[in-house]
Image 1 (cartoon, rainbow, N blue to C red):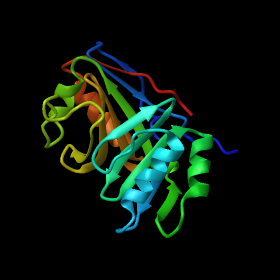
Image 2: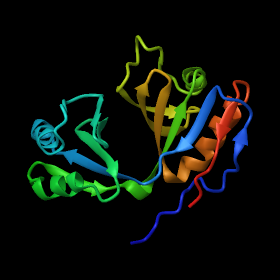
Image 3: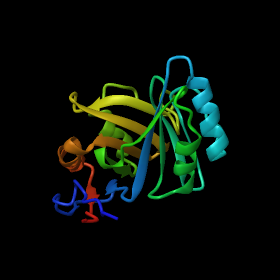
Image 4: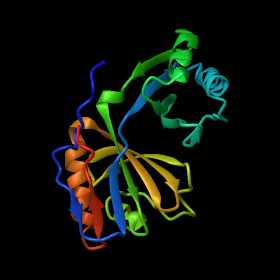
Amino acid sequence: MLKSYSALAAVPAVWTGAAVHLSELAGLSIWQLDAWQHSERQVCELLADITGLDVAVGASAVSADGVRVLWAGPARYWLVCSEGHAKAYALRAALDVTHGSMNDISDSRCVISLRGPAAEALLQGGVAVDLHPGSYAVQQVLLTALGQHTPITLQRVDHEIFELYVYRSYAQHTLEWLIASAEPFGVSWQTQGM
């Protein structure tokens, strides 16, 4: 099996403080499910049956036992799990082509974890949405842009933990933007390499 090379491996380690911690979540499989116009509910039901999660139509995420389902746009969902996870293959086998399609998009995305007491303030300076917990709840997913031009899928995992799903071609630029913007708060980044 080929091993993926991190798009972030070239970004040097940084330590200027501990208010923002950045890391790459490597070793994940991201499967995109696109429902047809008439079949979004059936796709959500299939996701719920296979994963055992309470999947609903709309902008949210659910997770348990190392499997996560994220809303990724109208009639689009992502199944995020460890590489080679059996539920991904079970879902692929069970999906009827009359309801939608499923593709492995793992190599097209990088997942950057952003955590710490200044994580929300850092992100708020780069996105045009309100990240206050009253407006952007835990497990909610947003499709937005960072720095007004880089498209990201943003999930609030916990009050001080965010995950950014970034196109691989934008990943290094996005990480460098996060590091530079976090310097006033204090930031740490340690590459995991290949």
